[in-house]
Image (cartoon, rainbow, N blue to C red; front, side, top):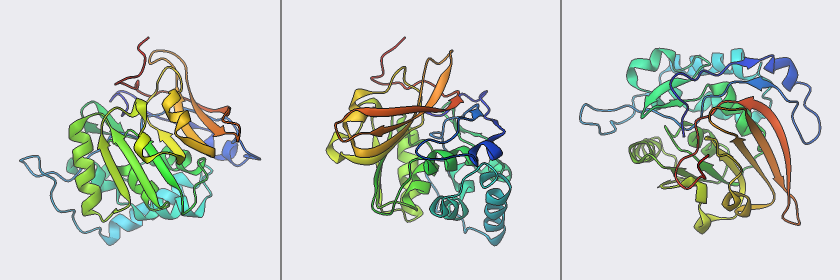
Length: 270
């Protein structure tokens, strides 16, 4: 789910730390994370999604500046991720009154107590999945649909689950209006994954369970990667990167201290 509205995410020394990435695991860096599963949309007074406005030349310039000033300095280097960050119109995923802040590198509230994460974290979490064009990805926590749109620019298929019905339904409509035909949205409990569409090459989770849901590890392909925050809502949380070995066991590395809202639904309660 999206982050608490009081949550704000600040990368500390992310730029030079991420440049020291080597081998399988990125260098640990420190961040406070707002969940990437909150979202917003261009809404009519009746609550219906309006046709998306034209993406202006100024919006495109703002996205290019965002990548240059925040995403690349955060250590993100994957050309597919950088291209996606330049293409996806983030302003359409937040309330219209916040369009002026859409290309700043911080979370924004999008309703239902949720936020859309700062773009540099969205890019970072996407990059460490090491996606290719043929991948099928599960996202747990659709929110605004922004993360799903970033993924859809890169991979063959995105399956995304949102437990808050108004967010899921609005995101589905907006993604369709923007032409993302390779995204499937389900309103439901992401703790159980999406077994009908499994297995997945990668899984990205934008809310924090107390421990990694067994259903998600089961639905990950051998060799697949999962990015998930884990820990108590009031305690220390870590963004974990997991890789599934050929024998079904999981290789796990903590990559970022974070703060996400708790996973709801079927997730065990503390």
